[in-house]
Amino acid sequence: MIREQEVVGAIRAALEREPRVNLHNHPIELSFADGVVTISGEVGGIAAKKTALNIAAKPTPVKGLVDRLRVEPSEQMEDGAIRDHVCNALTSEPAFRSYSVSVMVKQEMESVRSVDEERFFEVEVNEGVVIINGMAESISHKRLAGVLAWWVPGSRDVVNGIELSSNAEENDDELVDLIRIVLEKDPLVNASQISVRSEEGVVTMEGGVATPNAKRAAESDVWYVLGVNDVVNNLVAIG
Image 1 (cartoon, rainbow, N blue to C red):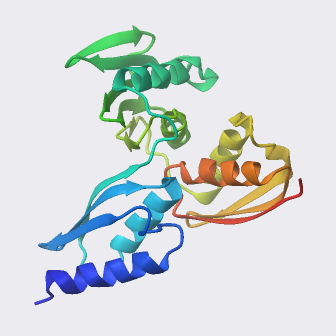
Image 2 (spheres, rainbow, N blue to C red):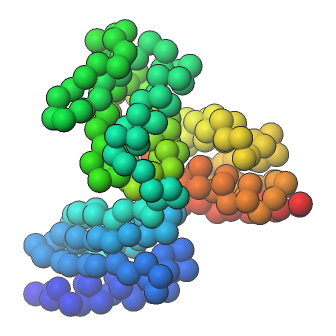
């Protein structure tokens, strides 16, 4: 029988070798029982979170993963402020013009905008974790809603439970199209300078950008997209 310390030790060793995770500055707690790894702590960014989760899921004995990792927020915000920012982002997004939006306030769901019973978002925030449920017409809309929630400075995690009204198949072409839309929405990024391709969720970016900050922003934007498993950032900062 594989012991807990063997699995945890193998995962921790892999995390220590991964520069994106940086266990020295952001310690992570691990446990393993009945085939399930529980991973918790606060990491420095979305890349660290997704990379750590991928590493934790790799050992052969691991059959499930409990994700309790949170991302260090770029700005401290109360749950109510985060909720308001997420709702504003959803209701202001042209692609969601026909969506109804509701929010959880004091254990009661309140309507922010009532448009369509079949396309809707329900938003809840708990200790910086944004939970979005509802029904979307496409996987692109589900992914875009998640990115808008991640872009709120106080967000520590986004749980995207949105269901789809159609049986849309996920593919790399759709993922790349959505990534282009996301990059175009970021004022820090000039999307026309960036070429994007994806192979089974591994996204590669190439091109020249104005500043190192733009390079970092573009990579974070891609990591925020649901379905992205890894990012190869070959962008060159020319400024």
